Amino acid sequence: MHIDHLISGIVPVLPFASSEDAQAFLSNLEAEDQIALISALYFGRSHLHSDTVNEDYLPYLLSGDMNRFWEQGNVAPSDFATVLYEKGSNLVSYYDAFIRATDGSGYDRSNY
Image (cartoon, rainbow, N blue to C red):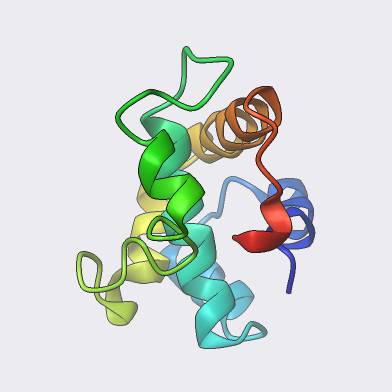
């Protein structure tokens, strides 16, 4: 699923009341979509105060190395729900920053 659709699907239900609620949300998604949400949140957290993709990230993003699987291996799938729950209302800001920075750099998120 396109990352924009994933983000527009998760934002209205944030923050999750529990890790069980986060897991229930994730259980409706394919594994690649779950990691996409995790990767986008960490990308966004790194770009909270940026209107474009930071210079240190841009080469990886444009080469395709930084993609929806970027955090695979850094965050275990069994921890996805806990991460989403613990980030709480900050997730909205992280996803907003992801959208803003990629828009500002002209990045085609269909590649993410």
